[in-house]
Image 1 (cartoon, rainbow, N blue to C red):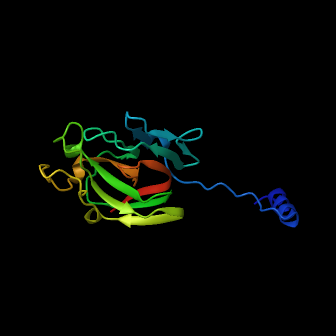
Image 2 (image 1 turned 90 degrees about the horizontal axis):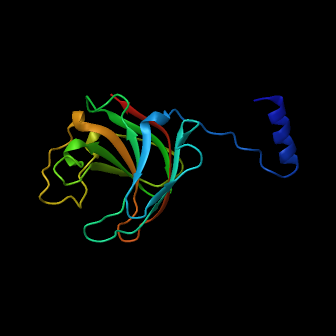
Image 3 (image 1 turned 60 degrees about the vertical axis):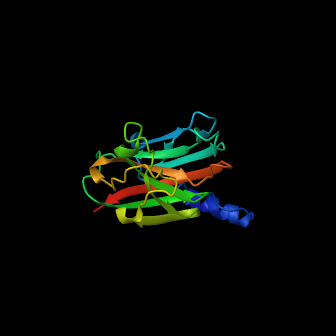
Length: 189
């Protein structure tokens, strides 16, 4: 810490003010991060770039479900840098979220080109105002309750998982607002 920053902090304390917070940094590479929203009016916003100082920061506004056939959605997406999973790793995540956060494994069987069920295996972690670190194994992920009964359960097929979606747990009925920050995400053996 420079002597000027220390002197400034002391001066602020003497004046009854708080010292400026030093910026937190993460280790995320912007090239692997993106977001998606539905075409029904949900939005995503962020200042500057999606990833700044190695931290993904985004705010979502999700509209309520439009009708029986048209659902709304918002997603922060981490494209796996090494391509599809080749093993059954643990996922370590350091995050902040204003709502519970649904972590989804994007598996090709359930996508647009898959069997049309649109289900992902998912796990839910709690809302956190301060940085939280969680570690999940693939056994922590399950199909959501809304998965259609007609959907074939292929199980998690690691080589078919190419992205991890981080989704604020907002309801279909009400939609809502959420803020999500991610400082680190790692795949551990």
